[in-house]
Image 1 (cartoon, rainbow, N blue to C red):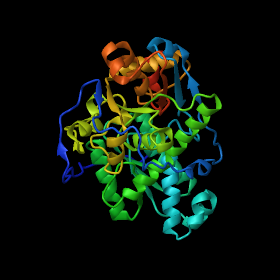
Image 2: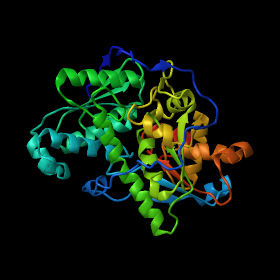
Image 3: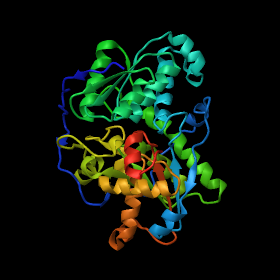
Image 4: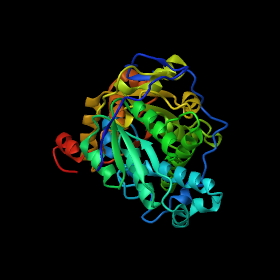
Length: 398
């Protein structure tokens, strides 16, 4: 692994202002729409993702968690083994890379054939991304599949296990002296200087289409959930809790779950760490804002300070609310999920963490619409991406 420190990237953002943290456990979105009439999730990524090693990730029922929370049923979409990686991110990275690179070659038919696309690329361009861990590893894996180099930038202080995992995919890994937003800005600068391809789910001027394609790739996860629940006669669910970050996965969730044909049957609630609740701050302000300082949550995949401008128009209308999670809540949820046989990393356990707290408080329970008949879907977006920390928390090896 080649690793170096890179100077702090510029943080100037016109029309985005600093905002204090939102610490309320449940923020109801006053602009939420029950149905998004313009939502049209694409089915095209689903057959595309049937790459070697593909299988739908499990939708696990958690009866003990349902009983503890006083709801009818809880299912968890377990993304701890998605196409050989311990997180869902390769869904967006692979789709965005294939579509963009095939278009650059003027051969859109190659977007469905990784082997043919690799032969035409001949080792260029370099794939570039900023990450807190999972997205960067996914981009590095996609680069390896396509025979391309990769450069991945992380904010300083990332877990050594996550850095090593990205380097293990063959990428050059560099730490940026600053926040996740600084790493994104630096990655964009490197891309401009080198002519690489920036694959980012957070939006940057001139890169909006890439962000849209990443979100589109995440549709596979939600089509799988629909097929799995239909197979047992439980579609649609009543409530989906989705991790937010910059908003890309939440955008895919609301597009899938609030499309017209579902007639408002599914409530979608976002989940963010207490000290990285950038979308909650934006919903409260009615516009995109930037959180002050650096985000330090244990839920590293959600340590984002500014919502995506691509995702914001969707999440601002589609999320019924935001719940914020303290680190200790994630720790408790990791243990609760482990007791039911689920290996969920810190970010992966965030939804379960907030379900536990909402269910335990009568006021929050009523505000979230939880009842004895409620059927809930959670997303475990990652497995034990920092195995040593998972073992410290749970008390055994993953």
